[in-house]
Image (cartoon, rainbow, N blue to C red; front, top):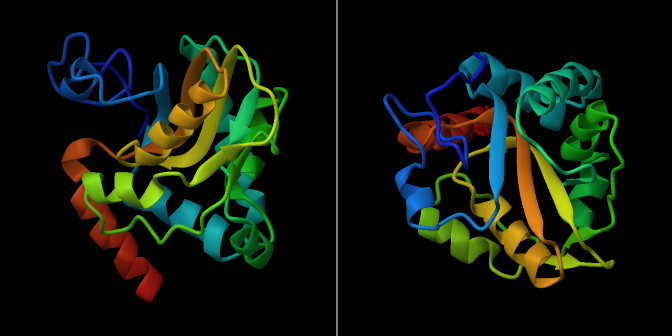
Length: 205
């Protein structure tokens, strides 16, 4: 389901009757400057992303990339350089690919897969509270090259924004002026706990 207004003008959080910024953005909780997602995170979309990540259905990255490109073209993105959210090296070797990188290829923009590296093999975020996610990701990323200007960070799902916040923090400390976020799916804040429980159940199967 495509995300339609009303939503937060900064982070893209869907909410009925919202005008301007959501509570999190008014409180300056987000360190990135702009975020949008193509679709709401539904059961069907969860299954598609799950098959891509855990069942080696890499062909699914192409249609997801097309959805990402459509969102990029209709929203007010200013960046032209894409950085996929990195996996820890051992995890990427085990999986054989980084799903964020495959999806981001659909944007047909310059992409730097070396700029941001994950230096900690962080435990799964599933089931963690917002504060626990933040602690889990503290210091998890590092910058390997010089960075300036605007960077677009791409991932499959935006849940609480903790991963994007930590990457934005790391990028801005290293010289980035603006960090924009683009994901295929968005979990509204009122559905975060429900989605975590559902994702955990799927992985047990």
